[in-house]
Length: 321
Image 1 (spheres, helix red, strand yellow):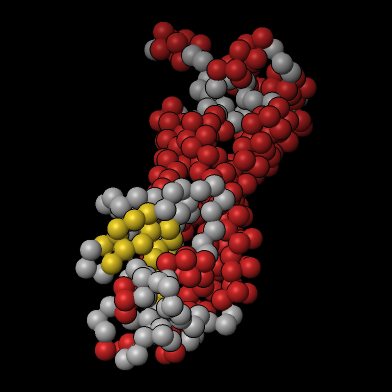
Image 2 (cartoon, helix red, strand yellow):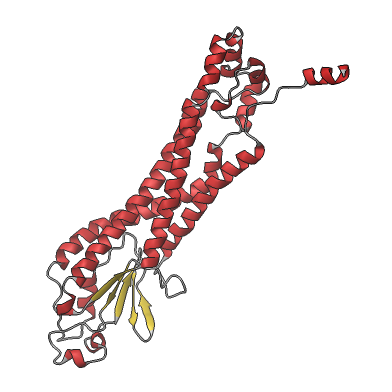
C-alpha cells in the first residue's frame, strides 16, 4: 500500500490538452472539407471545356434553337430542325472558359477554344453563324443583358479561380490551425501548467487562429459571391429568352449539375469557416475560469508566470504543436 501511495503521489498530473485522436479528427475534418470543396470547384472550372463524359453535362446555361422561328424562311414551323436550315446549330451551352455547340441527334460537335476572362455573347455567335440572307428576330432586351453579363462574367471568372486556388492551399494549411495545446486548456493548478504549458493566448490567437479565420472567411466569401453572380447572371439570360419564347421559340435552361457543384462547394467552404470561427472564439474566450482561479490563488503569480512566460520547454513544444 505504501509503495502504491508513493507511486501515485509521484505520478505526473495529467494535462488538460486534447487527446491525439481528437486533434487528428479536427485536423482531418478541416482538410476533408476543403478537399471536397476543391473537387467541386475544379469541376466548375473545367466544365464544358471539351466533349467528354461529365464535362459535357456541366454547363451554366443551354440555349435550344432547334425550332427557332426565322423571318426569312416561310412555313418554318413545319421544318423538323429550323436552326440547321439557316446555318445555326441546334443548341449552345456555355461554361467558364468557352461555349460548345451541337445538334440534337449528334450531341456536341464543336467546342470553342478556352479563353481567359471569357464571357458568353449569344448575339455575336448566332449572327456569325447565320447563312447569307437568313435573319432572325432576337429579344429586344438582350443588349441590356449582355452589358450586365460582360462585367459579371469577369468577376465570376476571377472569383471562381481564386476560390479554387485558396481551397487547394487550405487542404494542407488548415490542419495547422488546430493545436493539441490551445490556450483554453490552461489548468487552475499551477503545477499542471508547469508540466503541460498551454500556448500563450496572444501569440496563438494573433499568429495562428486569427490569420486562419481571415483566410477561411475570404475563401468562403469568394466562393459564395461567385456562385451568386453566376446564378443571377444566367437566370437573367434565361428570363430574357424565355419571356418571349412564344415569338422566337428559343428555350433556355440552367445547368443543374453546374449549379449544384458550385453551391455544394460554397456550402463546404462555409462550414469550414464556421468551424474556424468557433475555434477562434474558443481561443479568445476559453480558459477564463481557470485564469481567474490562478489569479486569486496563493500561487497564482507563479502559475501565471509559468503559463505566460516563454520558457525554453514552452517554446520547443509551441513549435512542435
